[in-house]
Image 1 (spheres, rainbow, N blue to C red):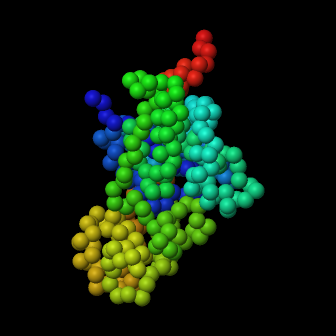
Image 2 (cartoon, helix red, strand yellow):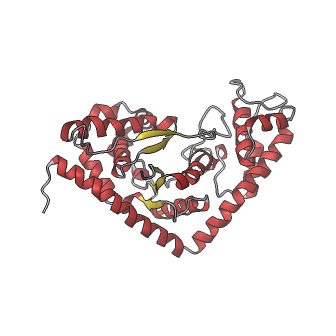
Image 3 (cartoon, rainbow, N blue to C red):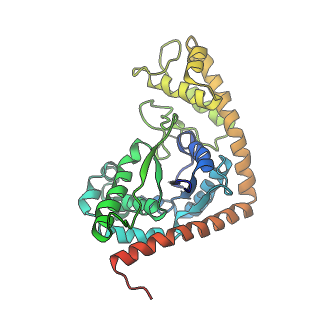
Amino acid sequence: MGRLRVLSGVQPTGALHLGNWLGAIRNWVDLQKSHETFFCVVDLHAITSPHNADQLSKDSLSTAAQYIACGIDPSECTIFIQSHVKAHSELCWLLNCVTPLNWLERMIQYKEKSIKLGDNVSVGLLDYPVLMAADILLYDADLVPVGEDQKQHLELARDIAQQRINARFGSEEKPILKTPKPMILKEGSRIMSLTDGRTKMSKSAENDSSRINLLDPPDLIKKKIKRAKTDAHLGLEFGNPERPEADNLLGIYAILTGQNNDSVKSECSQMGWGKFKPLLTDATISALEPIQLRYKDLIDNPEELHKVLQEGREKAESAAEGTLQRVRNALGFLSI
């Protein structure tokens, strides 16, 4: 029995931040030892909203470098750029042709983003979930790590596989596409904003002070944590819905220092913000220092990085081609 296969990825738009690392990439590092893992930089998704064309390739390379700097090991997993594997685009088109429009119109993220973009909303933004389904289904993924904001997209991928491809063109005994299951991430999967403890830390937030980016220098980290929203209470605690900032910052501190919640609660229950914030600052700078040093080595000497991405593309193409051919055959395309 082979290892279960996991597929995940991050857009290259905007800098990776503490939430990306603690909520996703840190878990990927653990998964690569126990699962067959594919991690991609999803650059095709990055152009569904207006983007900087001059920056896209640089950001894609930077994101891959940050994966490795965070501990993703190319000898243990497959790291690749989404657009380098043409099968993503082709399978997306094939799935488009069997996916009902109203399935896409009800997607929550599309509704929210289309309101913000108004007349500038693209067909690509509407179609984003089908491309995500193609990403997942191409690699016969058994499991997909998901947070709350991506559950609906994974359910769409499952519905497309089961109801629109397997039920119509395959059979229960011989399905064409594997139906993936969600992998619920462990603690730290939802790191909140420094400016609003009720809002998830986000790359797309306009206020850069709302997040700590993985490549932020120590002085900037210190400034952001010093300005982070707090409350008037003495002592920090977990689980109080009236104190979301306390819950978030204390949780970040626990993860970064490798302590459990009970230990951190005992340490900080009588502590004021003025004493706690320097502790959090030191823990954050210390945790990010090795990532930043490894990143600098990779970016300053990109030959290793290019080699990793070339090998990753070849492995990803090999895995994807079989799935794409099954779908082509099932839909009746001529093969010669």
